[in-house]
Image (tube, rainbow, N blue to C red; front, side):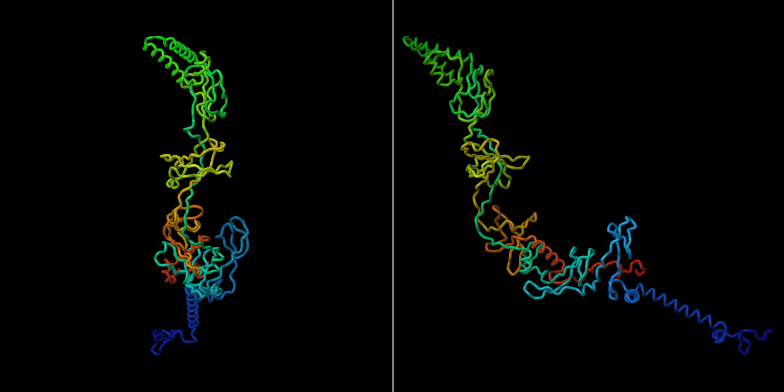
Length: 539
């Protein structure tokens, strides 16, 4: 059996089975299946290589699947989103699955290549020549730059930056954070930038304050009782009545006054009897008693006319009249007819308003330049055309804790009683003028810690300078340092120069002063362009 040939198995001449390629010779039954598996393996390998290249080779990816906005696409695909939920995106119109609002169409931004095709022509420099373009910057974040036109996340175009905009100029005396601004004549006209000349003149710092009219305390007189008694009659019986010096005010009945008058009459009679006495001591004693009684009447404020009438007639008067000690207005009335009075009691108050005080509050920086004796001008709301001249009479030594102001007293004449107590008035001090370099107050830019002005150097160049300001007044400011007489300063639209100067200073700091950034950050690309995240292409 070993020498017999097995059916279906090829054998050599020695009877051994043939292996390897000789088994798959053409015409045999197993050759077709082997060829099929080889072709299938090759196809699967090519598909695998194509998938890997599709997601990892950008050129091959764009060749097989061109994107909207790419080089091979003429139009972009329409997208729809919800106004309340921007993260909802759809390829076709419809309603928002969250709030039900109708989806709105999203305008796709052109690709950087398309934007480059419509890039603006080079602008002209202020001197008239072509300006050298350095790069483009993000309008909201200057640190983000691009070498070609682009758009930011909000769809705003990047702003071109030219070489002349990054040149500061002006030396090392520029304030920190500022740079020299160069603008053309047309931009100056459109922005409304105007300049004014710095001149040397005298400026008077005005000090104005609102004051209140109060009576002069030195012109207030009180009528008081020095004896016990009763008010028999009031000649001045209402507040505000005008009285003159020596005018009768009231009549008082006092038993003590009646007794004093009788004592005086008896003393006078004793003097007459002792005239014939041979004793000198007796005559002097009687004369002294009479003089003491008369002095007592005067100390009780009995008028001299009443005493003379008593001496002439020898009759005791039941009531004594008290006269006004000064001319003025009855500003206080404490008694009525029939009122009992006692020593020290206030009866009437008479105030002389021919001259009044004005008390005004001044701030600390204003009070430093006020001195006693300085002249002042007064205006009233009730009579705007009238101006009165007065002077500073007193400066209070303490500040008010509530208002942080210093009270200053002015003294003014009061003809015709134009100034009435408790009336509000406006007071202006006439201070001494200060001579120096003066510019309009509108040229100053207040930063909180310093003052900046922009000096017009000509040819559309504005140089920022830090200045020290002295006194101010009438819309002008004294410049102690920073600006010289004869220089022009910007007085209108200088806030535009301020923002432009700060921006150029930031560009200078970022670019080194003359060139674009060495490694600019690429602008953000719209979703779906050049971003294979989420498609299996991330390495």
